[in-house]
Figure 1 (tube, one colour):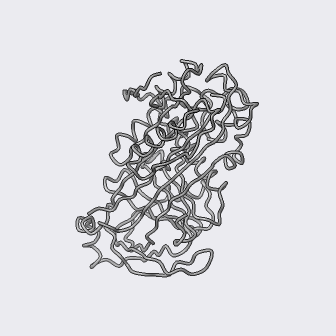
Figure 2 (tube, helix red, strand yellow):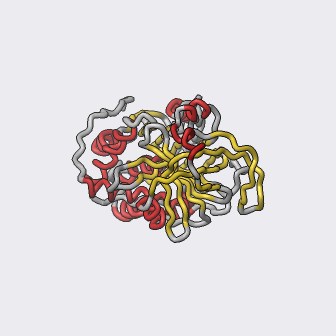
Figure 3 (cartoon, one colour):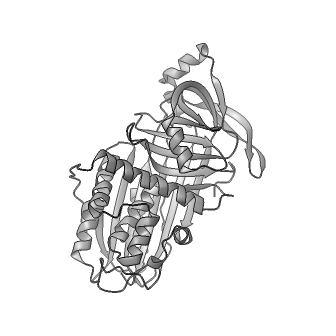
Length: 391
C-alpha cells in the first residue's frame, strides 16, 4: 500500500454584474528565460507567506497559493486601472502581460505532466451576457480554462459547478458553493489534486507528546530513518521529505514564525544527512472566505462597484466572493510496502542517526523542485499549531 497525500483546492471568484463548452489546447512553447521563471516562482512563494500571515495564527491553516493564483490571475486579466494594479501587486505577479501569461501557461503544462498533480480551471459565463471574446481567448490560451455557459439565476447552476468540483477533486470536495448571488455574471473555479507517496518509508511510532499553543497533546506519531536534506539557519531548522519520483517534497519547519527570507535561506543551505525524523500524523479540512484576507493584502477596489473590469465587458463588474476549500491527510496508512523499497531503512541498523522530533507548532510546504537556481515552488502551504484540531 502506499501513502497518499491528497490536497485539493478549489477557488470560486465570483464577479458580479459579469459559448459553448470548450476544452483548452495543451500545446505550449516554452520561451521564458530562466531568470523570468525564477522571478515568477518567487512571486508565488511571496504570496504564500503574505497569505499565511493574513490568516489567524492561533489556528491550523492550509491553503494552496497556486490554486488561488490560477483563480484570481484570470480575473486580473480583465481589470483596469487601480483594480488591476492592486490585484497584481497583492498576488505578487509581474505587470508585463507576456511574462505573466507565458509563465502561467508553462507552469500549468509542467505541473499536469508531473504525474503527481492535476490542475483544472474553468470560466463560467452568464448565458447571453456580453463578455469580450478577446478576454475569453486569453483565459483559454494561457490558463487552459474550460468555458461554460450557464444561468446564474437558476439554482441548478450551483449543482453544475459543484459536480465539476467533485469530478476534478476526485470526490474529496463535493461542494464549493451553497448558493450563488443571482447578480453574478462570471465565475472562475480552480481545482488542484495532489497525490504523493513517501520516497523513504515511515512506520507508526505510537502516541507521543506534541506541545501545541494550547498545551500538551498526546497524538499519533510516525517515524522514518534515512538520508534527508536538512538545514539550520540562525537556530531555525528544516527537514525536506521527498516523495517518490523526487520532483515533489514536503518541507517541515518547526517555528512559531517564519519569513520568506528564512525559508529561502533554509532551502539554499540544505545538505543531505542521516536523520531519524518523528512527525505527527494529521488531517485538515478547511473552508475560507478570502475576501478579508485579500483586502488585507491590498485587493480592495476590485471588491467594490468602483472597480474597472472593462477588459472583460463594457458592463460594470466587481468581485463578489472568493471561496477556498482544502483537504489534507498525512499518515502512514499503506506505507509498509513503500518502506520495504526504501534503502534508508536498511541503513538504520548501521548508522548513528541524529533525531529530529516535530513535537511543537510547525509550518509545512508541499513544493516542486525547480532546479538549483530556482529553488522550490510552493504548491501548498500550511501551519499546524494543534494536532487535534482538524477544522
